[in-house]
Image (tube, rainbow, N blue to C red; front, side):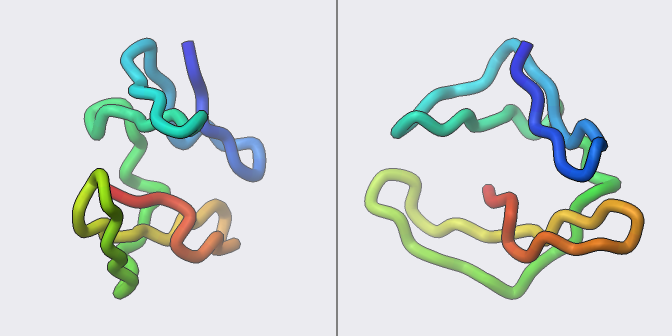
Length: 69
């Protein structure tokens, strides 16, 4: 089981991550969306196309653009 944790909170956990460039990508159904806030940031990647970002929020503390889809 792979987990994404920030500030002691489990943000995502899954046995079905996809590994690309040594990074784990979680299926959306395994991500706890209550910790995500929409961001205005968008980028273009050669293999995944356009990426949109989320800011992670735990107990009022923000980690800007820490998650993307």
